[in-house]
Length: 392
Image (tube, rainbow, N blue to C red):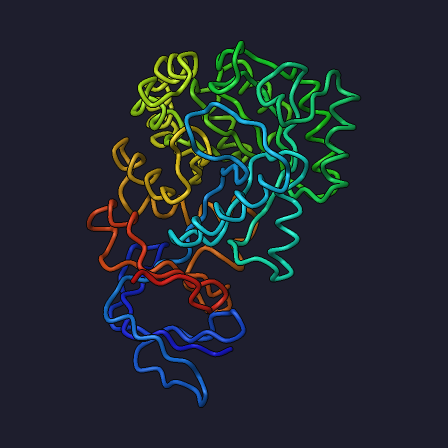
């Protein structure tokens, strides 16, 4: 299919420049030309954007597609019901301008099955990469849906199981967390040797690794073990920043996750232990993010969507929180486009409106560079050159 998008204000996410009254020609899902006064080929569909701002499709590098973003009280459901919920969540992400996600852990490899369905065109969903079941210590954070493993050999086997199932990433749990009762965010969990065993298995076959890591000791264990991405990073120090820069390790801060817990509180039915842990950590979390940004650590956008009241249409609120904590609007947008594409290993094909790249776009009535809150109001999503959502 060939489509010409006309009269767009196209954002160059590398420089922040806006090219007004610009056309973008797509063919078979790929950007073929970008410029002014482009002619529509014979038989091409023409979509007039009437001056709206065109961004690359947004990334969300930390979602839990199978979760409900409710109050954190879990109700057992059959896999079929969880799968239906995940499909609806993926559609919601797409309708908010998100065209690429990384799932951060799902029960029973449901995320991997849906990834296969997406690639085959059986469901309409963002492009994705998946991790299968997270690897955690017995009784550790994420044990209810993860793969419990103890000792390096068992962690190695657990990683091999996820890779066999089709995971693109291996997720390991370096610390406790907010959502699991009886564990604390600052406590180290899988040891450095256990983490290294799982990470080595991923790297041997070209897969990448990320870790739920909130406390400093666990973060350092994961970094020394060779992790590719630190998720959350509540408590970071200068040693972490220097190591991450030297070894090209990303931070995905998920500022939105504790934010929505603290904003809604126990009054919304969130368990008191969850609210307590989030409230105790949120100031340090913001401080670590600000210092990481100032130090020049690479940062990508992810929300932890699916945690309490962390809704799937609110990916852009992470950018709002990034700006509130010191980033410029362009820097926040870069976290959700070119930085995220780099982390996902798809920068050559995604993340900017460049000839030869995938024709994934998020369209906004007004320029988010002028007010980052505008990123919350997507008016059109284009996936592979096809309009898959349009606000009525």
